[in-house]
Length: 195
Figure 1 (cartoon, rainbow, N blue to C red):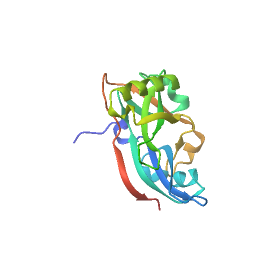
Figure 2 (spheres, rainbow, N blue to C red):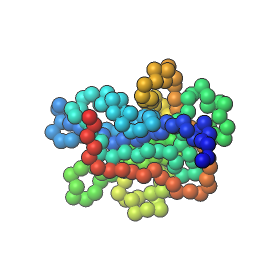
Figure 3 (cartoon, rainbow, N blue to C red):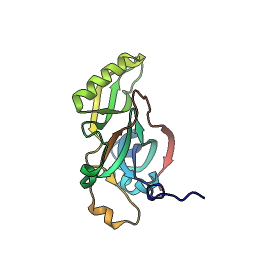
Figure 4 (cartoon, helix red, strand yellow):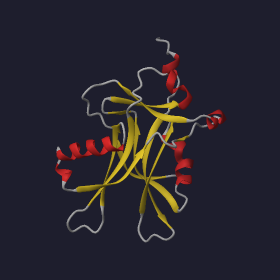
């Protein structure tokens, strides 16, 4: 039987991006919000998810992604004070959450497309999106960027039964391991109640 190395046996924190549904008291229809955080399992974030949108009653999950790879990069959750000691990280590139908006003839609602984009800054995000949309039929559909957030800023980290983690600060790190890849996290959709 092969002996596991320390790195193989230790669970690793993963980045989760979650689409939430809920109905704030003053809303006539269901509203949506997005949460991102780091944990070993999505269920570890349930408490943080509920606290993140207190205005909505009975928050549920409509979709989620576990983000471990994107494009040419592995996505890792790193302790901030350890980042300078880690090798092969691309410190120039960052991971951005983008919410594109647009309109479709005959539809009463604005349509949205959520994307994760690796870029150096928000200007590069815009350039990357323009190029990506030119290569697809969606160029006429999505007309503007409603939101663009740096995912490493203010990341919520939940480690069950680990009080020590409350004193640590974490960030999203990117490590280039491929070239010319179109790897994208799997999106899981459906209605998921949060207990």
